[in-house]
Figure 1 (cartoon, helix red, strand yellow):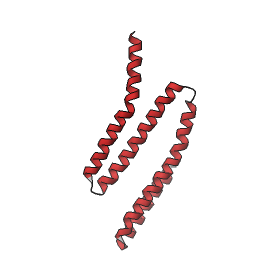
Figure 2: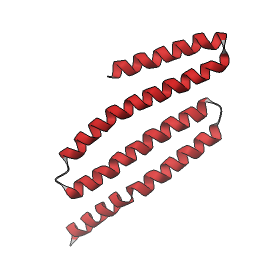
Figure 3: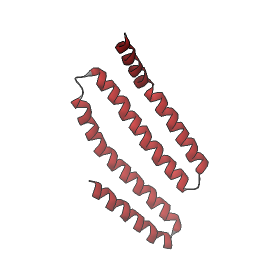
Figure 4: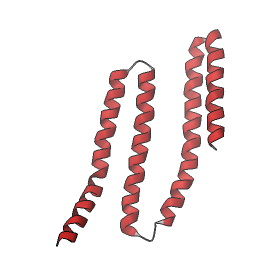
Length: 127
C-alpha cells in the first residue's frame, strides 16, 4: 500500500520532469492529476480503516462521539497541510499562511467538546 503510493509519486515526478522539458504547461497538469489520484487512493483506503475503527467503538456512545471528533480533527490537519504545501510550492506563501491559520482555528473549534468533556470529568472527580 505505502510502496504503491511512493512508486506512483515518483512516477508522476519523473513524467512531469520529462514532459516539462518538452511542454512546460503540461507539467503542472500532470502534477495536479497525480496529486488527485494519490489523494483519492489514500481516502479510499482511509475510509475503510475509519469504518473499521468506528464499528469497533460503536457500542460505546460517549467514546464514539469523541473519536468522531478526533477523526475530523485529523482530517482537518491533513487537508490543511496538503493545501498549504501546494500554495507555498506555487509561490503563494501568504495564502498558505491563511490556510494554516484557518486550520488551527478549525482544530480549536473541533476540540471544544473534548475540552468540555475533560473539564467536566475533572470536576466530577473533585466532587
